[in-house]
Image (cartoon, rainbow, N blue to C red; front, side):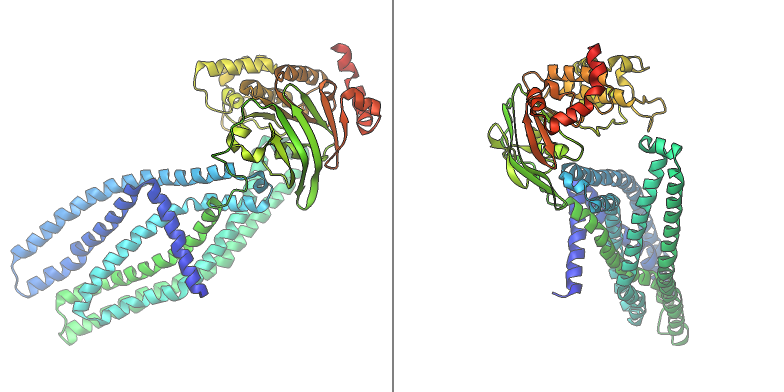
Amino acid sequence: MTDKKKNLRKTISNNWFMLKLIANFSKTYVGIEIFRSIAGSLCNFFSFTYMYKYVLNTIQSGGGLKDVLTYIVTMFIISVAYMIFDEIAEQYHLKKSAQIESFLQKEMLKKAASVELACFDDPDFYDAYSKAIEQSKQAQYIMWHLDHGIWSIVNVVSMVTLIVTIHPVFIIMALIPFAYNLLVGKKKNNISFERNMKRMETSRRANYVRRSFYLSDYSKEMRLTNMYRVMLSQMKENIKELDNIAKTYGYKLMWFECFAQFISEIVVYCGSILLASFLALVKFVLPLGDCFVVINSITNLSGSFAWASHTLIRMDENSKYIDNYRRFIEYEIKIPENENGLIPNSPEVLEFKNVSFSYNNKKVVDNVNICARKGEKIAIVGHNGAGKTTLVKLLLRMYDVDDGEILLDGKNIKDYRLSAYRSSFGTVFQDYKMFSLPVTENVLLRKVTCDEDRRIVEDSLKRSDVYDRIANTEKGIDSILTKEFDSHGEVLSGGEAQKLAFARLFAMDPPIIILDEPSSALDPIAEDKMYKNMFEVSEGKIAIYISHRLSAARMADMVYMMENGKVIEKGTHDQLLALNGKYADMWHMQAEKYVESEGQL
């Protein structure tokens, strides 16, 4: 198959894909738009183009005024009726367009929420994701070009039928812009697409710079260092790059448009006037009505031909944009939901069995064996980069293991329904996030539906020792967190935010608890209190604590010491101290930090 045929098939396939998505959302919308285009084109033809011919030729041939008035009145009534319909359809179109864009973006966001974590570690994923967001808007162009394509086809068929009866040579003249568009349109589209892709990439970098100036994550560094100068310099480079893109591609596109205007306005329009006038006024072979129709409609016909070719060309351009959206939405998820999978029921045993995992061709987990039973508290400790957090990601099936298996109650976790399996876990990560939403939703991580939900929020905040801080705000548990969208929003300190993150666990009451570096923002006294609360709430559950700080290890039933992705020591806290190995060295290095807290507790 030739490249042209492959490209044509892809163009048709992509446009048909998007049209089906829109039709799946609303067949009524698609039907109304198609009818609107056909009716509008016919109404325009009979109200203007054909009416000039009919009226002038009827008068020239001595026809009656009654026939002329009857035609004009009939078309006036039809035109008014169509105008009313068109206005109603336009309001419906505006409403549905926004809904369709929202629907397409929602589908994309659902896809983004379901893809495996590895996608978020891939820079190309973010590039594809940002382009897909933009391309979700392309659906409106699909319908717009479909509407105008249908309008153009109906208009062309009507006028060609009319003008052929006048003189076929005018059809040839009208086809010139159509031929021009077909010849150069593909090249023009490629230039336009390349320009837009480069602009999108540069704009994404510029948006990152803008975010760094107002997001709290960057606020201290931006104010206390010269990083803001670096970012301003980056912004200048982005603006310069955008300017270069506009110049580089703008001039190329300009010449395409100028030559198209020359062909349409000079060659076709002026040539048609001269030829029609010659046939009517010199040769006397063209009635005045027909002459007027040709002069009045040849540009319209030429424009319709050009627009029909333009629609075909834009379908090709749309296909390039839709391809970004389609590749993203049709991405085959590596860790899919297993609808027929098992449902966890009061888990008893969780086990890593000879588990290995590599990331970017580097082994980060190497033949790990860990077992945690209901009622046990397991601590996995080690220096940063030892592979501890990767174990959590494997356990939650954000990644799948390369070798070995993870078992829940003796069953491979791949055999469970993914959503049900993950809902068995309550997890607090080191890099937890606060959402710019009410405290209630930040704790429940869902909408509040009843008074019982509010009671759960209050109880959870009390158990995580942050209730007083929240209760003393103006709106209490209904306070919005962060000031990103609310100037009266509450900004929590690192320790307060971490306690609120713990409140999520109390609210969920899951059968398996995972804390991944949970106390990084807490002082030793608050940390010790937090762990006592957490060990209390984890009674009768499977509890796993991941940390490079060993304060939790004293209270754990079993401690696993990791280094370079391997478990190098395991045992109770006392057993590992007696072993006098890597764990003992790490403990003694940190011990003095906890002497004061132990003396006060």
